[in-house]
Length: 296
Image (cartoon, rainbow, N blue to C red):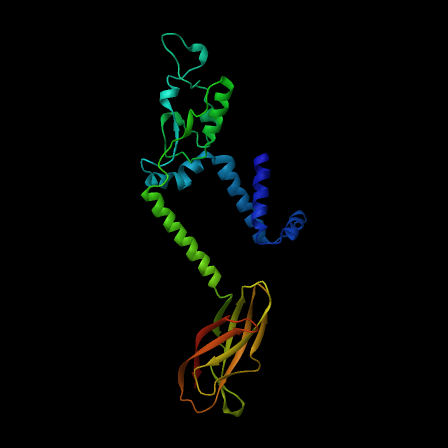
C-alpha cells in the first residue's frame, strides 16, 4: 500500500508540471478532471510502481543504459568500487579463527549484498550490474566500526585523475557547456511562423489592389509583454494593410491575421517576399521570415 501511495503521488506530481497543481488536486478529489489528466496520472503512477516497487533491481540490470556503456569508458586508471581481497580473505566470523587458519577482516556478514540495489556481491569483483552507488562501502564501513577494524575493506580504488582520456572528455564537456551558454545568451527571444490563408490565395480589393492574407504565429519567449511591428518587402508598393503592430503577452504566442496588399500592375505569378517582425522599444530583437505573394 505504501508503494501504491508513493506511485500515485509521483503520477500526480508529474501531471502537476503541466496542469496547475492548485487546480489539479481539487479536481482529482472532486472527480472533475479531463480524461487525459486521469490517463497520465495513472500512467506515471503505474510506471513508478512497476519500475521502483515491483521490478526494482531488474530496471538497473536490464533497462538502465549506464551499466551497459560504462564498461566501454573504463581503462586501467578508472576510479571504481573494489573489495580488498588481500585484506578480507579468507572471510569468516572472528570466533571461527584459529592459529592455523587466520581469517581476514571480512566477517562474511553479507551486508554489502543486502544493501546493493542490484543484488550483486562486490566481493566477486566488479560486475556490469554495478551502478556505482557506493551503498556497499557505507554498509561495510559500519560493520568494520562495530568489529573494531579499520574502514576501507570495500572502497574506491585509486587511479590517476589527470590522464589523456579525462582531459579529452573534460575539454569536450567544457566546449559543449560554453557553446550552450553562448547560444542561450545570444538567442533571439522571438519566434515567428508564417502561414498562408488557404481560403483565398489572392483577391482584388478596392482600388484594384491585390491582397493576400497571412497568419503570423508570433511567439514571445520573454517574461515581459511585448509589442511587435510587422513590415514586409520584396515587391514595389507592397505593404501591410489595416494595422502593422501586434501585442503578445509574456511567454505566450499569438496568431495574428495580416493582410498584405500590392499596387496593381504586377504580372501574374508567385513572388518571394519577406516579413520583418521587430520588437518595439527593444534593440536587436527582430526576425525575418520568407513567404510567397501570389498575383492572379
